[in-house]
Length: 113
Image (tube, rainbow, N blue to C red; front, side):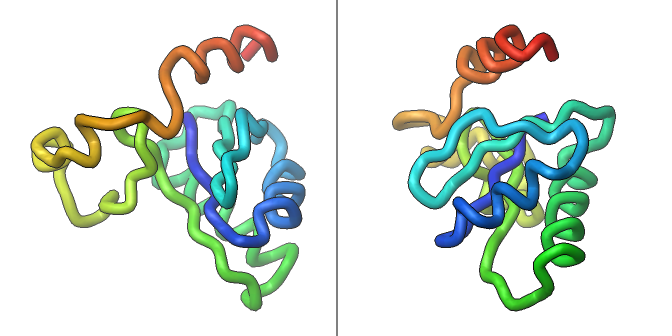
């Protein structure tokens, strides 16, 4: 399961997120760090896990968001649109993907996950 840690402080906060067992960095692109969570949790549970861990270790004074991925794009509308609505939205269906299935599979293969 892939989630995205998005923050201007990505270098510092990704180190904290990577302390969580089973969480790995796939890639970092500007302020977005794509994290692979090797567990059986839902994307919502993984988002909450990372948010809570950072809050526990670093406090509440940092600005960051943790998002899910939908169709290779950072899902900024996770709670407000259904998958059917997202597939009608050009943001999710056109343009360059933030992360591809091939990148995820290559990462998993390289790391035996």
